[in-house]
Image (cartoon, rainbow, N blue to C red; front, side):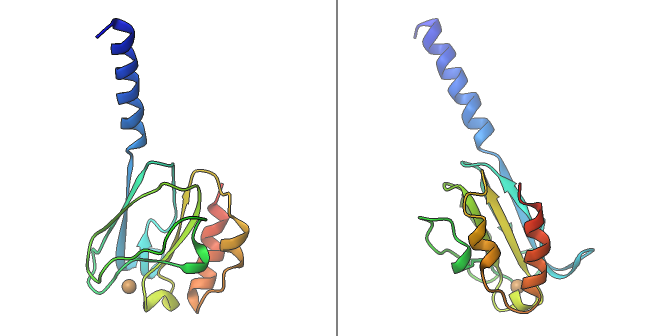
Length: 142
Ligand SMILES: [Cu+2]
């Protein structure tokens, strides 16, 4: 391989290492922000990053909120008590919840790249405490 090609290969490796950042969200019965929560409850990641959800407390699962999915992203979800990993391929805000406790406020927005679809998640109807949680969390969108 020529020196120029080696340099190009090294740069590509470095770029993919930067893109491969992983965020960990824990599903908890309680933390210092309240009961039944994702921690952190707001993630700002970039395209190509991965978010992993860990069921640290039993009985939780993670599921996308239909009215809060970036265009082209299919609904997704995990089984109860299962670890779930997702790679962010689409810019925008993705709303997450744990059914049936989302009425208790176990919800989280994940921002990938720019908030291209910001109006949609703000307008989405929410149940119970999920509304107040989202109103608060969506103020962190940048
Ligand atoms: Cu739950």
